[in-house]
Structures are given as structure tokens and as C-alpha cells.
Image (cartoon, rainbow, N blue to C red):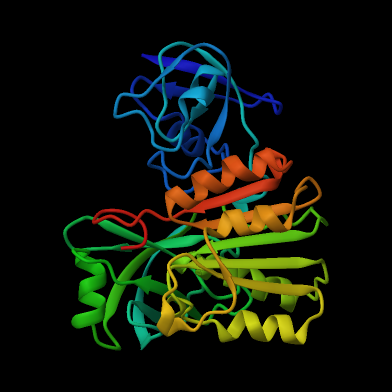
Length: 341
């Protein structure tokens, strides 16, 4: 059995098979929905069910609040149709121009940026390039059939190498292998680019970037693209970590802020101690942003980091006036079988 789905406001139509996630059906038929984690935690694919009903055959998604569900909102990466549907979601224009590939790559370098963050650079075959948008991610295809996802940290304009920031996770099979066993020149298989967390090229609004931990990687990619393009919009970068040592590439945003008067950088520690000798901002990064900007209605806000940060920031920033269509997020899942491990 299949059901017809009509997308508003575009009027696009597609069919979804019984038990098939609505996002999967849309992408399969060339309709580009926004998405990130594809597991119900990041909230990127949130939309409205205007008519009909959807169900969640697995557990109720973490990224969907009960209040949102009651108001007819749905996460289309997890929702399946139980009737014909009319839905409302902001489609991604031009996403079809990005070609997703499965490619071999060689580890060109491994460099520890901190006690638990490794910079990995990958070299593609000489005849290949991976076209991507700043903010997107790639997957490593492992021999056991599992996948590990990491955001690209380099600018799309500098695509000779692919740069990744890998956080060491206790019990994380892949990152333990990278830190303890992997050598330079190792051969890996990757798939990408993936995700719809990237800059809105049509917007001229000032920008606020909020990173948590290695969520700085996609923000770095976006910033490098903006700088290379000569974009002089006002930019505020907030990077939240636990302790000073977790600001693993702190010199770079400091350099941007020093070189460009329109770029501002605020590091934030949530668990600083005496040895940090920290004189900067403290607390949860989203609360620091909220204290600095009582009205966010004029800004585009981009957030990348762990789900608790994203969910708390989203709720707070909407209260502060940011419109949902000006709020973009990429939620990193730190678990044994998901993004960032």
C-alpha cells in the first residue's frame, strides 16, 4: 500500500510506501527536504502535517517535543504515513546539484589538536573531487557495514583535501581505532556529501554561529567560505566547551576576529576550574548568546553541537525572536553507532 503526499507551499507531490519514512520517500523521488541526522534527534526535518496522520513505528523521536507533536508538527525522517498527507516543509532549492558519491580516500595526515580531538585530512583519487556545501558531512563506510559520520571542516573551495575533526569517545570503536591504531596512508571508503546544514546563499542577514565541542568543524567550513567570498556581514561566533583545553583550535577564530572588524568571537566554558585561569565568559553557550542578544529577530542563527545544546538553544532563541526559517542546526550524536564517533 502507498499513500500520496502533497508538499506545501510548492505543490510538489510524491508517494510513500507503507512503513517508509517520509523523508526517504521524498529524497528517493527527487524532492529535497532539509535533513541532518536522519534519526530524529536534530530536528532539522521538522515540518507541519496539514491533513492526514503520521505514526512513529520506532520510539518517539528525541528531537520532537510533545507540545510540537500536539500542534501537528512532525519529524519526517522518522514519521511514516498512515493516510494520504498534505504537509508543509521548507524544501531545499538547488540541493540536487550536489552529487553524492562513494569514494576511496587515503589518510593524508593525522594530527592531535587536543587530548581528545584528532584532525584527519583525506586525499581523494587524483581524478576525483567531492563537491559539497560548507556545513555538510561525510560518512565512513566500515567493514562491518556500519557508518560513522563527521562534518567537513574545510572550505568547499579548498577541496584537494578533506578536513575532519574527530572527537575521541570512550567505547567508540571507530574513534578508538583512529587515535590508537590508524596510520597515515591508510585507505578508507567514504560516502557523501550529506545533510542540509549549509548557508542560505540568498540571505544578507547578519550571522550568529553557535558551536558546541567539535561542532566547531562545520562552523569553520562556513566561516572560511564567507571569508574567501569577501562577505562582510556582521558575524558573531560563540564556541562553548567544558574546559579551556577543549578549545582545540582557539587561535583560528581569534585570528579571524583580529583580522576582520566584522567578525566577533566569544569562547564560553561551562566547567572551568582554577588551573584554567579563565577570565572569559562562563555558563551554557546558548544562555550567553541569549544574554548578549535580547532580540534575535534580525539574525540568521547556525548551531552545531550535541543534541541537548541544540534543543535548549532552539527553544531559547525562538523565545528571543528568531524565526524558525532563520534558525539552522546540525545535531551531533555521540554514541557508538552514530555521528561524531
